[in-house]
Length: 235
Image 1 (spheres, one colour):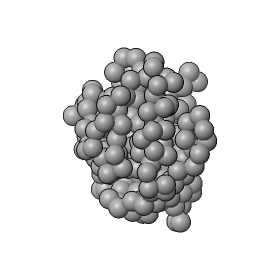
Image 2 (tube, rainbow, N blue to C red):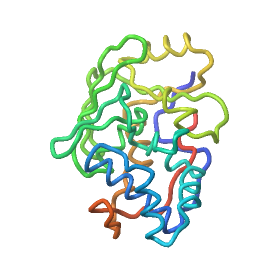
Image 3 (cartoon, rainbow, N blue to C red):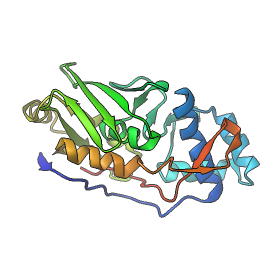
C-alpha cells in the first residue's frame, strides 16, 4: 500500500455527455439532493423522451460513462456521489435530507457540490469505530484528527466504480488502522490518502456538478455538467 498526499484522479474519462444524458444526470442528482431518494426508471425514461432522446440510448450512455450505475432491475444503484441504499457513510446537512455516500471520496465532495456544510459520519471497516468529518467547501474538521482515507479497488479499472472501488474507499481512524485492514485484505490494492488529499479529490470530482442552473423541470430544479469523470479514482 502506498501513500499519496494530493489529488490524483484518473482512470477512464469522458469529455462530456450528450445534452439529454447530461440533463437526465442532473435531474437524478437534483432529486437526491432534494429528497434523498433516486428517481424511478420510469421517470428517467419519461424525462429522456421529453428531452428528445431515446430512453434506452440515454440510459445506456449514462451507464457507459459510469455517471449512473443501474441494477439488474433497471433501477438506480449508484448516482455518484449518492447511494440509494444504506452504506457505512452517512452525510447530513441542516437544510436537507440525510443521504448515504457511495464512498469516502464521494462524501468529502458533497459539501462543495451542494453548496452547504455537511456532517459525515462513517463506520471504520471491520471495527465499526466512528469517524466524523464536518466539511464546508474546502474546509474540514476531522474526528479523530488522526483519521485518513484508504482508496482501494479490485479488478478491471473500467468496470463500474460501484463494483470495483466504492466499497474499498473508506475512512479509517488512523494510518495504522488502514494499514492493518489492507494487510487483512490482500485482494484489494490501494493507497493511503491524507486528509487534505482526500478532500481535494472529492472536491475535484464532485464540486462543480451542481454549479450552474439548467432547465430540468421534471424534479423542480436541475443543473448543468460540463464533463464527467467515468472510472473515477484509481488505486
